[in-house]
Image 1: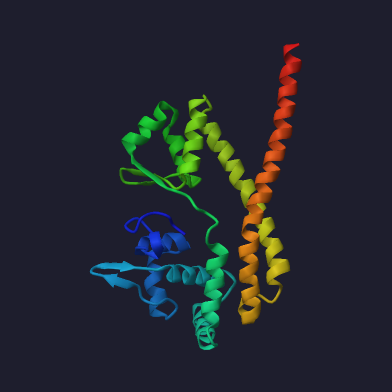
Image 2: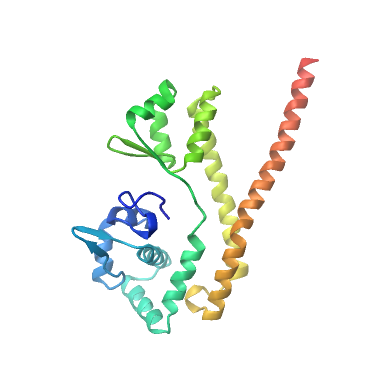
Length: 252
């Protein structure tokens, strides 16, 4: 979920049209189309502003997932209607989707103007570096404002730059880390899909089974991060020990 303020996108489950579309990975024009086809409830309006909720976001993600699995829009509408008529099946399914996707990312965004950005990095940041940072999702640029979705990553980048590491090489490392993190995520999600969800798929699961999966998600969420952190710490300890040994041998 977005952690920006209401006016920028999503704090407390309130999203403007552009923000909920971006968070769900859909085009803005699709929101009206989904509403017209009965797939998405209308937003709540305050004056001229349409506010979307976390429930809209989870439903949009579910629609995108079903489209990606080959369902037609009409088929999705029928499926959603059947779930809604089936004793709250859709609400349970959306609750599971919220449980599966929430709390993975808890970051504090940082927004500044371009002048502050240039002052922060100085000549270390070239136009190409900025383009790559946007491409990798480390920054968003909207007019004169630059937003870093993660304060932690911003602070780590600044610390490395101040130690003399070229920004281009930091971005190279970030690109590599992203690819490795994606592979790890695929592995963990694959394990969960095969051994917790099972082969029948979510749409055919009973209420009891859905509740079991929801509880499993809550229990397993911290495990992935702890495993990765522990293994990275072990690898860094081994690698630093080797590096120190190599430096000592060089000095002899």
